[in-house]
Image 1 (tube, rainbow, N blue to C red):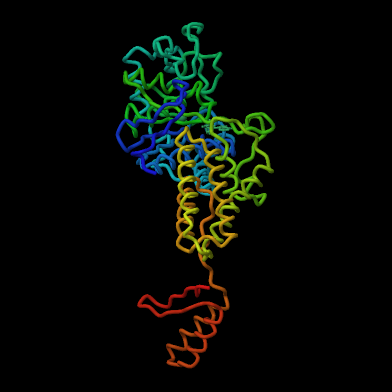
Image 2 (spheres, protein in one colour):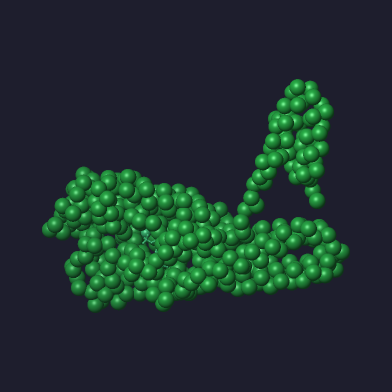
Length: 473
Ligand code: AMP
Ligand code: ZN
């Protein structure tokens, strides 16, 4: 399974086609994913986006690419300012709390850390400089309220990502809030002049007293860390317009170069047919589910097991099915560790070759994870059948264990083996033996060792102190 022989195809929102993935630099991928707005706990719809991006990154790494992954934290926008005011906290203290919660949540979901998590408030100078370039180039202008706007009529390709028909737009009409519908496509705010609703959130800059708009944050931070043109940009479909459309316009108008080569958008997680969203009140945070005793890895499985461009409904039944699927994998691994059959028929090698090919081909095909998982569970069934017939040798079983662990580097759904915990009784005996040895009471020391052995625990004395391990059955 090497990158030299396989071709990854990705669906590019820009062209609305599956394309062969060719990175700018051989062997390296530079990717940006819009991170959370840290004004509240993220809901599991948001985590569908982050888990999809994690799967994509893991697959690229599996195929041998070195991935530089940037995920921003939006810590200044209309929502964070409002939230901090409601709680009477400074903006940074307020957003720190939810940023921390976000990191805990992605850890629970076994999402691999990004290379860097830049925060918007740490990058105001970069945003100011980008806006100044846009003003100099005449694609941005200052409104009478002191805010700076992007003139969409000056960027002829405006609308190319979300396939907007811009001819129908009203020239010069302006929108100052960050989120608005396609039908309301207008000149949007790059820099928002201070108004009393902003309270003590402002920066004194060359552009005046104010704060950045949401869209410019991602242009400035992605280009700072990944360059003016980079490989992949992801986000949920709701971010395609206006957020990503505006990112393209700002970045390309400033640099004159293509901003992103492959745009990838995940579909929504639904609840009874409607998008899971804060404003609809139909959401679960990860914490809601964990306090119900649900398994975070089953939640991860559920979020990644439907193809990212398909919507699906969240249900507790589907979560239960995810848990069962993970258990099937874990049970097989356990059975394999005990396998000691005849083996050597060639059947197992045939199954291994098939699953490697099917899983790999499906994932290369725009991350077709449902087909990849189907081939994996066919394999699990067939290996279980061979185990029932005692037809797998210890060596063959070791190969299968390694193969499943390799698939799980991509899926990330199997529980880590728990650290072995010493029973309290054994701990007392180890201490007793140590004390006896110090007192040169060899009889007591030997008796304690024998009792431990009877419990299946071997002790040995090393330069670093006493070590213990379980006796192999
Ligand atoms: P936000 O914190 O609102 O900026 O959202 C973070 C990410 O979650 C973005 O990529 C959104 O597009 C994505 N997102 C929001 N709601 C959903 C949903 N119901 N299903 C899937 N992705 C979503
Ligand atoms: Zn963004």
